Length: 349
Image (cartoon, rainbow, N blue to C red):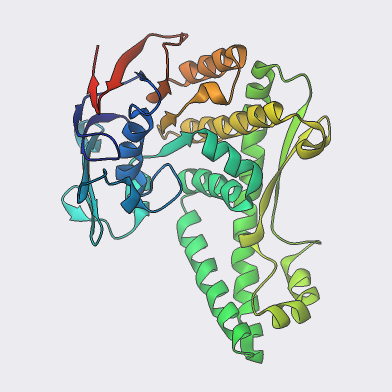
């Protein structure tokens, strides 16, 4: 999928911007604080309903203004669509093709988006929720039954946890359903892990990391089965009032030369591995026929010049629409369309 038009008003430091990005590589240049990230944030707001930074969406409204507005056009022919996103202190409007968005999944399905930024890489290193979210994104786009299965699991988990908090011994009645759905999710995680091995190894090799990198997906429980883990955790679950084991506790592990990266990899190497793994996820989704849009914010802060060039070479091979921010012009394996952000506005080539 490609973004064909982006019109935004009062997103952070940006005033009124009308943008018609290129199909391939879009390079956005500007000084610090000029509004490069805010431009990408406009895309993210329309495609995900979320900002690229910490804090609420309301904080993205320009200082002294009451409302931000984003209008985004994407696709072509029968796949074309339009999204409108508006936010004020008291109201949110999110509309896809003229109808209110009832679930963010409606937009996610039409407009896959992956963000690479210093904040996202830090989150991947520090937070299991961030790592899980990337795997969920992959499974959402390649496993047709993932969303319905995940929603069913979440419903059963909420019911079990509610019974645990109420000290209701009947919480065990939810275990058979929880175990059954978890087995389906575990199979999906296994397929995701298998699909990622090849692309991850390919990207890491291109990055010349100086070691053998590995990754694995943990299902969210210790031992051979969730049934055994639930039984082993009964006393603890009852004391805490929530369920310790299950796919909601699944995680991703990373190794370098067979050892956890936290123990042996430098901070720079960890950043390279996180970038490589996320790019491998994009490759799997693209290989399944989806065309994600990529936002790369301040990649120079994450990768040195040599590895940045290798990263862009892999992106060029994928042929995906990509938006890259930088202070100065950078070189790409394929031609890029350059835009300049200055004084709250945008000028094109």
